[in-house]
Length: 157
Picture (tube, rainbow, N blue to C red):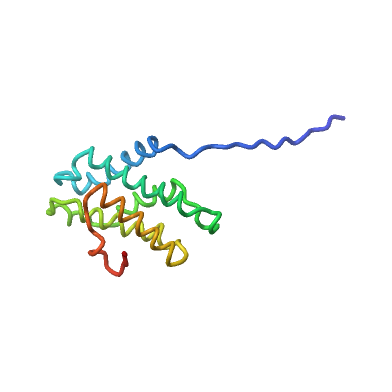
């Protein structure tokens, strides 16, 4: 009679690093933006799309550092949230940006989606202010844009 021992095998995997996320999300953004904005002065450029992916990843990484499951269990932010953020752009008619040579319209949509996916999960006014500061500072530093006055019903300090 032989005895089988059940062995518990644990597998660990790491989330992709910054460069890997950059490659993946720039590749996701490319067809989404080109579908409607293939002649836009900003968004037809692969380097600008890559820069947008970089901004999104920086915001995501700062959110992950600032808001952890140690604070609240639902602060589990994963690359799946980044994917949802990118895919959320498909819900919009991006053609309104086609006639506008600036990047602001897409950045406004991006900020709105960040609110929907991240900010709506944040607890407490102090934490909401921290989130707003992360989002504002990245968009201002990366894009020189002040899009936050244009967002309806959203409060930025």
